[in-house]
Length: 131
Image (cartoon, rainbow, N blue to C red; front, side):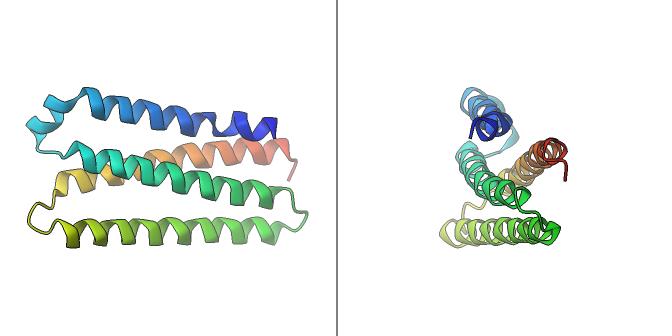
């Protein structure tokens, strides 16, 4: 359990850093025409989804069958894809008049940041498990 806490620290730090930036850079984001509340929502969504997929993949690392890990990776991709599509469609249909494309593009960048952190953490955990 201790390794799980250490392993999710980069995700927690990324979440805190991004939210701090979105809250403190109000005027800069407004100048660029970006809705910061959409970015905060995207950050929260990707943080939660990354935690879910992290625990799925971490549990799969403990299994001796390598196919379990591959299935957990594919399951994580599917979870992320459906979460992104659902969030984007919900945002679009609830705010069709005020749909903020720059914020959606910012959300895509947030997704990539969480993906990079998640892959780095999983690679380190995989080395420790001697898989």
